[in-house]
Length: 270
Image (cartoon, rainbow, N blue to C red; front, top):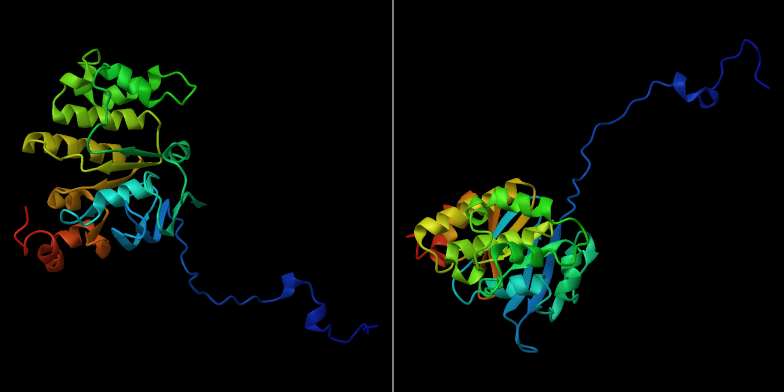
């Protein structure tokens, strides 16, 4: 028993009587990526790898472009991420879940959509019918979604009863993106949306892509038009012969001489 006039040991004092000294230090930052591709090898034939150890990450709301010369594996990467090809090795994680080996319809259910370069609309259906087909798996009222898409693509709104097969190349790309957005995805995969378009239409399509991203949708933009893609991207990944040769912020890559040598024609650009 402690005497009345004796000092009380600090160990018996309530914690509120202590002078607390806390050392300030920085905790390591943990980034929860929306999409992670880790050491992926993939191809169209067993034991023949087009992608050779790809590492690739996308944060929520980010626009990341994948560029590279023809045959570098850009479209193969998009198809592998979306489940159209199964990796030979490596893992793909989406929203913290390992989706390696899942079918594309299962990946759609988890919030990812893919717009291929060709065969991306139903030519015999009208614009409005195409949008409705884009949301066929959703048991919700479609009018608010269609109104939102038509507000984003006014060029389509004026022609909503026109058959998709009669649209120009740029209009088809807008419709294909609108159809995918009917599912309100967290991540949109676009495979060379500017292919075979006139310069004016390329500009229009890229403006729409930027608008989609600014609305909060993360985008992986696989693109041959490296200059335009890097100008608008948060980050870029340059592929060479199935490998991720260079990665970094879009504008830095645009002016990186290594990218010029690798892809843009020894710095000449195009």
